[in-house]
Image 1: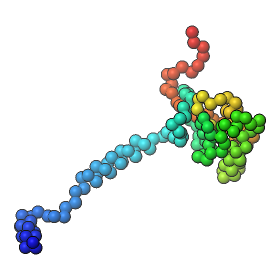
Image 2 (image 1 turned 120 degrees about the vertical axis):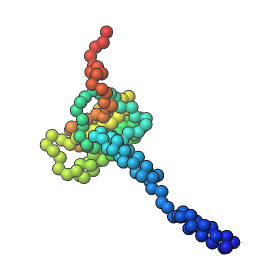
Image 3 (image 1 turned 60 degrees about the vertical axis):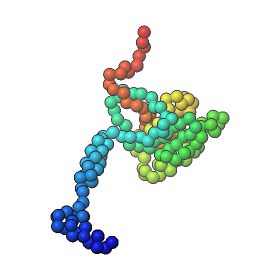
Image 4 (image 1 turned 45 degrees about the vertical axis):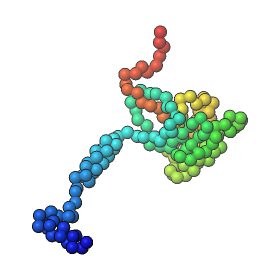
Length: 169
């Protein structure tokens, strides 16, 4: 068997064929695709993490919000920066004006960020467009009591051609 292998090697050496070539074409293709992907996805858009069951309201505003603390409100929970702070069902029967779990988390976030500006801290509420008004009101009240006075609501930005409101006939 070894004589057969030795004969094949001699034949390959005589014909000039090399057994150890490295094909870099496919590697270059992968890196080219990776570069284009990174170029396309490194745009100037701020992305807020959102869940699939959250439908944001629409807006035609040109002004972009700054990066800040984000409260996510779903049908069943309130989440601040990825940490669940309250259940909506538990708040329904509660007679409390403010949401205690939310207040505690906002205090924690305040300590991490240091001294508050004179006009209050910035916060964004990202909630489904169908959340009840009483819940939104409680969240906003809790934010203002914890010195988060500059409240923004996350919305889907529509093109500038959409109507901005008013009566229709």
